[in-house]
Structures are given as structure tokens and as C-alpha cells.
Length: 431
Ligand SMILES: NC(=O)c1ccc[n+]([C@@H]2O[C@H](COP(=O)([O-])OP(=O)(O)OC[C@H]3O[C@@H](n4cnc5c(N)ncnc54)[C@H](O)[C@@H]3O)[C@@H](O)[C@H]2O)c1
Image: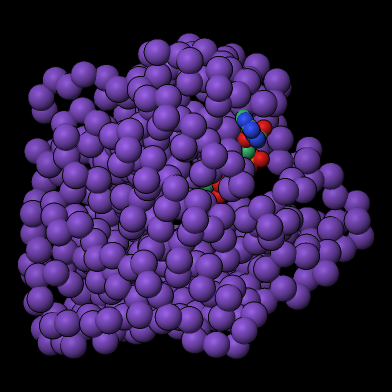
């Protein structure tokens, strides 16, 4: 590994999503955490207690810091565009959480700002970054299984039971399952299906009165290359997707007893959600238990994968299928089935490193960005189309789709240099 300079990074919005991401920041030798910014004083206090970094209250004061080169934006959805544009205009590179923005006009303004300022813009944090999906993409690209025809993706989770602040319950501010979780599945099926979705038929379900935001969606996508994809997410926390695999479990964020307690507390109106949420933000009473509990946080390398979000996937190609396994992927073809192991080093936040590496490589080494603003906008377009289709009962034609950047498959799939990734990276064929 060449000795590379450190990139000065900061986090804006150190909430639940930000707290989860800080573990990946800690692991990246090439990043230096310069600062965090959050309007919540308790959060700033807990952040500076844990890290030798500066704490600011706002995007404005953060952007005055000349040591900060890039900003991870994990403020609430309604601020993504405003904060990303402000940061780029003040000389910072940005990675922005999903959903990239609330609407296509905002996404376009972000893209335009990146072009005008020359800053890097990455539409971050979707599961299409992670090794199993990148490897599936490699195999599809190799043509060994023929063309991709269908991608089915089903998630059964307890997402709807997790604590929410008021703005997360407001659809106008990007609340609800479709905007918050849709991008994971959509970004992934767009990668595997070639990026170019032609049309969308969507159904959105909002049937839990105590939680008046969508907790269910399903959608059918037709791609320009003839592939189709069906995605489903039911987030009510009854049946758990982990049970779809023999090594899985009946728990994700909560085990069954906790889900009953949370759900019944919501029905009875006795749950204190702001306090529940602060408990899992940085330094909160349940932060470690929730995000690092043995066998539960499947984002940390070492634990077997279970179908939580984004779910259980089956890719159908002309001459075979691809699925996930506990530590890799399974290829099913005319010679039987064989596993490709993709185990990251123990303890690695495998789902989160690759995007930080993508940022680093783009800023420091001039590498291409794979999750560009345009790519993110195409995923946002499909996300918005699900709700639009559900409301109107119509098939929605898409106009802003883009294919994956051609050398995506060569990207550093574990967020580690190719020299350390063994033969996983460069084997488009398998067997
Ligand atoms: N909840 C999750 O598990 C999760 C996981 C990954 C990503 N995300 C994404 O992270 C984003 C935030 O969601 P969350 O669940 O972490 O919510 P959250 O409320 O826990 O976090 C938002 C944080 O931003 C701060 N904030 C709000 N407005 C601000 C402003 N104007 N300036 C500075 N700080 C401000 C809040 O004080 C809070 O700490 C969303 O885009 C979401 O999609 C959430």
C-alpha cells in the first residue's frame, strides 16, 4: 500500500445515521476526523468527549474551518440539498445520505453546483456499495450467466418501530419507508439491472394508525434492456426477513419481546420516542447495544449476513441465478452451485467503508466517482415514482436514468486497496 495523505473530513448531523457511520470513519486510516457539527448541544458534548475533534453548531460555522476538506451530510432529509450546496459553494467535497434530496429539482441543483464549483459530490449510503452486490455486478458484466433478466428483492424488517422525531413523520420532509429505505433496494437493482429503468409501477401501504407514514411498499421496474425487477419492503416488524435463511434470526434492531413492547407502547401512546432516539445516538444508553450487539449488527464484518434491509435477493440471468450467502454470494448454474466468499477482515464496517474510499480516491487520487450526483438523481427519480404510481394508479415513465460508470467493477469493493483484496476483486469469472 502506498502511503497516502490523510483527508480531513467532518460530519454534519451526528444523529442515529451519523453515529452508525462514525465506526467506519474510525477504521479509515486515510481519513482524519476534523470536526462534527450538530445543533443539539448534548450531541456535541458527547461527540467531543469521544473524539479529538472540533464541534460546531451549524453548516455555516463548520464550513469556515479550513482544515475540513470533505463533509459527510447526515442531517434530516429536508436539509440534504441545502447543506450539500452550501458546503460545495464553500469549497468542501460532500457525501450526502440517502435520499439524496426531496425532489428532482433539488438533486439537479446539487449536480449543477458540483459542476460549477468543481467539488466532488457523492450520493452516499446505499447498499449498492457493498461487496456482495459489486461481485454480482462483476458476474453479470462478465456475461458468463447470459443476460440479466430479473431481480427480486424482499425485505421484512422492524424499521417502522424504530424511534422517530416529528419531521420523520412528515412526508413533505422526506419521511416514510419509501424515501428512507427505498434507495437501498433501488440503487442495488439499478446497478445489477444496468441502471436504465424504463418505467415503474408502485404500491405504498400506510396501515398502522399509530405510525402515520408508509411502512410498506412494493414496486415493479422494467429496464430498457428487458430485465425486470420486483422490490418489496414490509417494515412492521412481525415476520422478520432473517428467518428466510437457515442461519438467520428473528431479530434485527429489536428482538421479538422488544418489538412487542415498542409496538404496544405506540398503540397505547406511552412511548417516549425522542428519548428512545437520543438513546441510540452517540453516547446514548443503548448506542453500543444496538449498533454493536454481537450477532445483531450485520454491518460489522465477521457476523453472518441475514436478510434484514435491503432484503433477500435472487438475481435471474439467462443461464443461472445469484443469491447471497452468510459470507458471500452463491452462483447457481448449469454446473450446480458454488459459493464465492467475500468475507471482510473481522470487525470491519464492511457496508460503509467503500463509500468513504470512493470519496478519498476521488479527492486525493482523481479516481472516478461511481455514485455521482446523476446516479443518485436517477435512483431518486425511481424512488419518487413509486409513490407517484401508487397515488395515480399509473405506470410512471422515467427520464433521468443513467448507466453505471463503466469501470465500477474495478472499484475497491471492501474499501481496501486492491493489493489487500486478494483475488476477489479481479475475478469476473468464478469457479
Ligand atoms: N436512522 C437510521 O438508522 C439512519 C441510518 C442511516 C442513515 N440515516 C439518514 O440520516 C439522516 C438523519 O436521520 P437520523 O435517523 O440520523 O435522524 P437524527 O434526528 O437522529 O439525526 C439528525 C441530526 O441532525 C441534527 N440536525 C438537524 N438539523 C440540523 C441543522 N440544521 N444543522 C445541524 N444539525 C442538525 C439533529 O440534531 C440530529 O442530531 C437521514 O437522511 C437518514 O436517511 C438514518
